[in-house]
Each structure stands twice: as C-alpha cells, then as structure tokens.
Length: 217
Ligand code: GRF
Image (cartoon, rainbow, N blue to C red; front, side, top):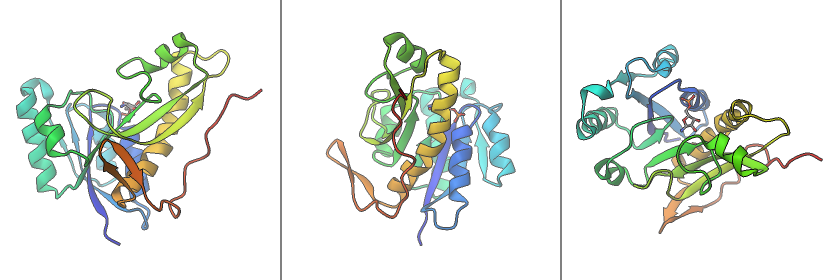
C-alpha cells in the first residue's frame, strides 16, 4: 500500500500530532508522518515527535517575518517529500502564498462544530450561547480563518455544570479520534474536494469514530 507522506505543523503541546503519529504506526494506515515542523523552539510537541522517532524541525517565529517563516517551513516540507500538510495547533496565520500552494492538500482541526465558533475561545463561546452540542471539525484550509470544505466532525455534548476547561478536555479527546479518521479519508483519496464541497467515496472499509453523542436524558 502506498502511504501518503504527511507533514504536521505545530506550535504547542502537540497532542493531536501524537494522535496522528500513533495512528500512522499501524501498518494499514494510509499515511506516514514524514516530518513535524514547529513555529516555536519550545513547543512541547517537539519532544513527543523525537520520542516517536519522527524527524522534526523547529523555527522561532519571532526571528522571521511571515513570508520568511513559511518559505523555510515549505522548504523542509518539500525536502521531506511531503504530499499533504496537517495543521495541529499551528498558531500562525498563513499567507495566500502558502494556502494556495498547498490548496486541497492542507487540512486543519478546529475545536468547534464549524461553521459555528470560528476563531478563538470556542468552548467559552459555546457555553455562553447555550448550545447543547459542541465538538470539533477537520477541514481543508482556505484563506479565511477556519473556513474551507469540511471533511469530518465529531459532536460532544455540553453537560450540566460544564465550564470551558472541562468541555475543552472532552472536545480534545474527541479531536484525538477524529483527526486520524479524517486524515485517513484524505490520504487514501476517499475524501476530495469538488468545487468547495468535500466529496466522499467508498469510505466503508475505514472504521468511523464512535457515533455522535446527544445529551442524555
Ligand atoms: C487543539 O484544540 C486544536 O483543535 C487547535 O489547537 C489545539 C492544539 O492542541 N487547533 P494540541 O497541540 O494538539 O494539543
């Protein structure tokens, strides 16, 4: 089986990165992690990548302008033979150059059910709005932040007594199941973009994550 070569971009703890690396270690997973690149030299995810034996490279975004950082990252992705890029807590805005170059080969995970709650502080905003289902989304990246064709979503119920921290922890656990699933769909060619919609073909042999939750009575 040909495995798609994936680059993961991180800025922080890298728990989603770890979930992708763990999934890729299964022999039948359709992607392999070729490189991890960080925008911060102190990102916790770098140690996790090293421990997993995945090549990594660290940049300090304060030493580069946006174009310079992206060109340096892009050069590392190319040198590693990357075909598909996963943003996993990459906290830098991306320029049209990078987004266009990797169009439909660049995916992101966002901690909300898009198109609701784009941007930051999604958990508190979901609580403030009083929604009963929250969750996470993996999507192809477009220039406008947290937009682009949706690949997969997982719903997480908001429970009585939730605060942003408790909710964030449950959403993050869902992210760790959702992202490997979504990457498998894209890497295997089953999820692709047609116009500005994701089209799914024959996903039957990829096990779906657990069914959607709904609030218990
Ligand atoms: C996650 O909540 C993800 O949805 C968001 O950034 C966070 C990254 O966390 N884009 P981690 O570094 O993967 O632990």
